Amino acid sequence: DTEVTQTPKHLVMGMTNKKSLKCEQHMGHRAMYWYKQKAKKPPELMFVYSYEKLSINESVPSRFSPECPNSSLLNLHLHALQPEDSALYLCASSPESANSPLHFGNGTRLTVT
Amino acid sequence: GQNIDQPTEMTATEGAIVQINCTYQTSGFNGLFWYQQHAGEAPTFLSYNVLDGLEEKGRFSSFLSRSKGYSYLLLKELQMKDSASYLCAVRSGGSYIPTFGRGTSLIVHP
Image 1 (cartoon, chains in turn red, blue):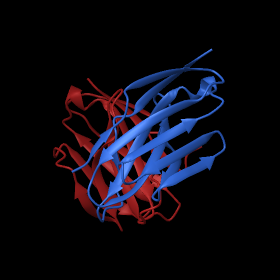
Image 2 (image 1 turned 90 degrees about the vertical axis):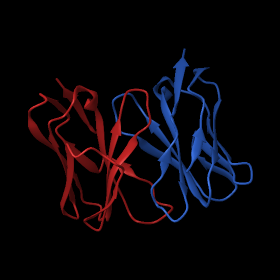
Image 3 (image 1 turned 45 degrees about the vertical axis):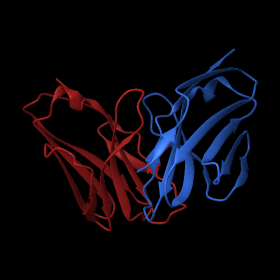
Image 4 (image 1 turned 30 degrees about the vertical axis):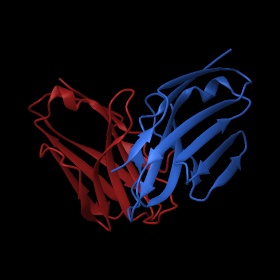
């Protein structure tokens, strides 16, 4: 079982839809991350929040909009996505220390039709 | 930037030993992680190396040589459930955020 919980597990959406992915952790971690992963590829960093503030945006298109309502929650709002955005979206958290690993959620499998 | 290289795919026999290599080029090396990822699931943490040498955890061991920019993950007594992708991830500079290699897909056959 993962200590980082993501919902939903699967999501199918049309290109005109608006949806949100949710992530929750209760380990007291102050850094939270969104990654995108295509099949047989490594996770690609999208966003990093540190102490509830956006610290890194890896030039992600504006159709992806992150939000960190509090230290335990991380959302990713989706709007006007393209079929090539179909992927596994992984949330992760970690303490802000160099020797601490990332703890990943099980991901949301997103399909854009 | 960082350059992390791993073999794309490896195969091995159940009960055997396999070594998965990872080489990296980075400035300000600050730690290397190994993760295991089964298809469609989250990566799970296996090991962390920041000093040279071997770290052992049950059937899995990880080695680091900072001067050579080299690490390996050693899996002993392979089981079918070890079939997965193994990701090497490197931290560098002042960042606590790791960069992932492309991963090595390990196939264990009977």
